Amino acid sequence: MKSERIKTDILIIGGGTAGCYTAVTAAENSDKQILICEKAHIKRSGCLAAGVNALNAYITEGRTPQDYVDYCVKDAHGIAREDLLLTMSQRLNAVTERLDREGLVILKDEQGKYVARGNRNIKINGENIKPLLAGMAQRHPNVRVLNRVNITDIDVTGNRINGAFGIGIDDGTFYIIEASAVLIATGGAAGLYKPNNPGFSRHKMWYCPFNTGAGYAMGIRHGAEMTTFEMRFIALRCKDTIAPTGTLAQGVGAKQINALGEVYEHKYGLTTSERVYGTTAENSAGRGPCFLRTEGISEQQEQSLLKAYLNMAPSQTLKWLESGELPGKSNVEIEGTEPYIVGGHTASGFWVDTDRATTIQGLYAAGDVAGGAPQKYVTGALAEGEIAAQAMLRYLDGNKPAGISEESAVRHLSEAERFLDGSDSPYSAEQLEEAMQTVMDSYAGGIKTNYRFSEKSLGIAEKRIIQLEGLSDSLRAKDPQELMYIYELRERLTVCKTVIAHLRARKETRWAGFAGNTDHPERDDEHWNVFVNSRFENGRTEIILRSVSKG
Image (cartoon, rainbow, N blue to C red):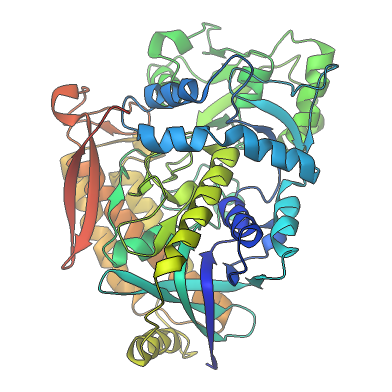
């Protein structure tokens, strides 16, 4: 493999929502050199690749940032960082207005005010939101983008960041990137569990299937403190298409009903996890399948739904049209997805301060990879990118890079070349990935067990994930694309081990629907109103309990 050494002031790993806005903010406020490394292509990468039809975090008229904080804390059953949520919420409207000025189509009423969808959301036509963000970043001369470069690891010495290593997926170039400050904005982790749809359709999932937990894995390997991985996110979605249900619930007021036509959502609660729990409970009790009641909505509402789903999940609109069962005539069947680890909806991710600095000096996290602040969605990721950019610029004033040692570079290059020797291996990355998903589904609370697990089952899961990690050493790749698959598998396996450790550590059931501990089925605020954090040290995941502070 040929090598290329690059020096930059700021390295941004991941060119998604948070990554792009971090680059924009840093470029507009300094002359520092900024490098974005994106595994795909920045124009259509990350969670916004296909578009979105609403901005779900916005301070609507009559509401305050503290109102949004209170909502997030309540939805997370108390496990959330109010300091992170408030610093994020105070910027939600400003970043929204910036996108409006840049050309994002935000729906407005006759008075020119944004059209609300519920108490915290506004409607947009957002098919082009990702190209818009990419264009904002790329127009600055001090921003450089490396597309199709997969960052495989960061370089840390003495708990200080020095840069990162990456591989060009198209040409196999090995990149040694030295940076004074690094932002991880790689998103959360999909593909840990067996998905709703197998085989050819396995990519039909709620969360971006190309988000592998890479940033989490890098931080875990180097001893960064992580938080709340046991608060998994399970989306309630339209059956088969895995299209969002919020547009139905909030857009037309559709209630959750069982096969008997009974509205059950109030019986179990209305938080995000409780909506999932109610659906699985009704199915388990033999009162399924479950639906969102759309029968009887107006023709205007029906047409609005068809158009809205074209902006974010065209397969749902196509299903309605091809089947002839339009939502006004037929209720929409719903189901829960497999679990994801995603800090944009739950509190999972890096443990950060209000600057979004991690516990590794010079390393920052924003968006889905940053923990502690659930329900951040698109605008929250933008706000965290802005916060991180401003903090990194301050950090650069007094800190110079130590540089990446030749020894570290050779070690990482040798690892890549070992996998890329072109020889045959007894397994493929895809086969081991399917085995991993089966283990997590069966023993670590997947769809198969209605998201429930026990101490015994988690022990089996841990043992088998460690076995698969050992088998992954024998994988071989014939080209850089296959090499990327090997690294993606190993990232997921690292995250799986942390998830299992966190699920085992929290001896209660706080988020019924997201995580059901059959050994401890009740909520226990006396002992477990705490953050379950972890740090990987000496080959073990050490659990750290941190108190939840008000404010």
